[in-house]
Length: 114
Image (cartoon, rainbow, N blue to C red):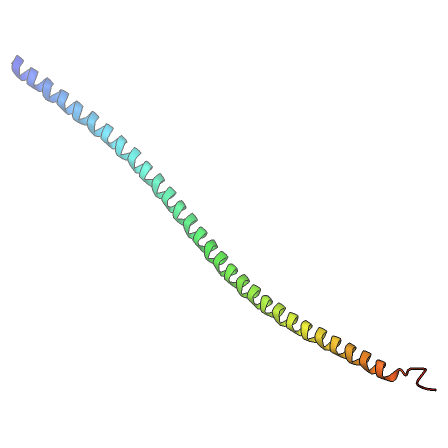
């Protein structure tokens, strides 16, 4: 009978070890599930931040393109205004020279008038 008692105690001990192992395993699984949930949340947050950064980048690229177009348009206008100014300046010089020449022809030499 002592052999049966020993086997019974060994079986009881093994059952206790199994129960303790199961409890430890359940706690570890819950801890891991909490870590997984945290990592999923962090991953989602990082993904949302990436999407926001990409959207900001696209807006910046579009704004840059629009500003470059406006700058090109203004450069074109400036070149046109410079050409117009140069043409007006040359015209004014030509008119001034013409008026000066006409004044020179109108002025008579006082000695020749006698």
